[in-house]
Length: 309
Ligand SMILES: Cc1cc2nc3c(=O)[nH]c(=O)nc-3n(C[C@H](O)[C@H](O)[C@H](O)COP(=O)(O)O)c2cc1C
Image (cartoon, rainbow, N blue to C red; front, top):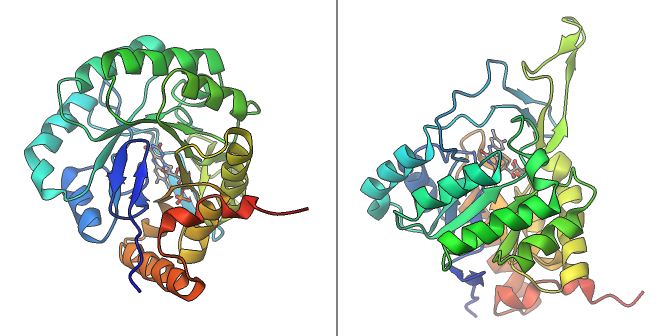
């Protein structure tokens, strides 16, 4: 039996549900092409801002064993520069490219949308959830009114492009933020970004990261991310959701799908360069589907909700 792993998520067609998450190997079109060749169904760029950013001073990254803590500070070469480079190398990337955009205000996002309208992009992800770039994350993404205004503006300038918002689990009003984004025309939700966290060096007797706070990713946040996806499905029914957080195996990917995600992001699992994980997860999903008698991945979306308590 052949199984079908393809998905249509918010108008974006993917050959398989695995998406390279923003910020990991997404800093250059060449690296995006490598990840696409390794089996990803789509790739997301590093978050791009209108002006180039250098990011924070070292240390910006620490391996905690249960996951990673980072406070890179959204280093990027600037939106326009990246889109120019992407256009030159677009043919070498064989899957859809999702452009991640960051901004600190409606005005900044508006400018970013105007810039993007001059290029061909497959989909846009609004990063409204960075836990460490001051003014660029939770301050924006925690405000349902502002989120609605930003999405409405995106829809005015870019009416047809699949548009996702990436949310945090660090806010208390997730449902209101998501509702506001969907009402304003967002195609879907990416859940979740890293969680605000910190580590302290006992000998230096001070925080490890130069920025003090960072974002926790990897296995430690997986159950929290699954809970968020599950809650969104409970609240909104089947909406396009990309589940992100600690995916490193077919099981962790499938948990998101059963919770209600139609696609799954992979980030930390490839921080150490193992892009083979995409094919390993896909093989695992296929094997599971054959053994359990499912033909289409789509049939599995949200199945964990069919529970009689
Ligand atoms: C080093 C690093 C850089 C990241 N940069 C970004 C970024 O630029 N934009 C963004 O939306 N998320 C960024 N993230 C968050 C990831 O896209 C993802 O949401 C998070 O790490 C959880 O998934 P994971 O556990 O699979 O890594 C970054 C994560 C890491 C580890």
